[in-house]
Length: 217
Image: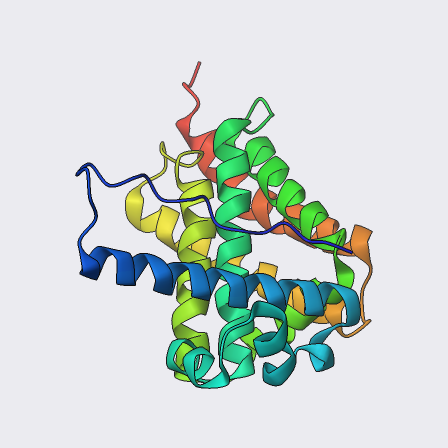
């Protein structure tokens, strides 16, 4: 089953001819993209254990030595793939604004759309979640990037909330998001329960601030 999770191509260079350094960077980006695409394919078809670096190397037509220059471990590779996937979700949200009459409704819509997209690829999602639990420094860096992407999707919705409070709200929602994904990946909860937990967290955290912002009669 093919999984199209490739990053959006970069804009063309403004000069007529790219320099050797530019060409080299372009080649590196292309090789990195092929490696991540191969990890997506293997993870989607057969799960975490199927993502072996030798198989990734063969599928991507990129040497093992080169792969290890980009990624320190399999978990680092999968965590980087998670950032690519989240970036694509972020792009879809930007193209189709969140639905709902309130900030809480809109945030529930965004998180629901993200979760439904992940649930359509259960083996891949379980592999990515498992990788994010690694202590590998590269994984931690990618995890921070994922958190930033999720925060960026929600920040515009909560623009009327005090910035410090908004940061706290998004941090707590991020923890709820991760814990529910881990519970789902380990078979302790199901699709509907994940949605319910995310919605409960959003409404408990966001709605009080919306009520405070309403004009008093």
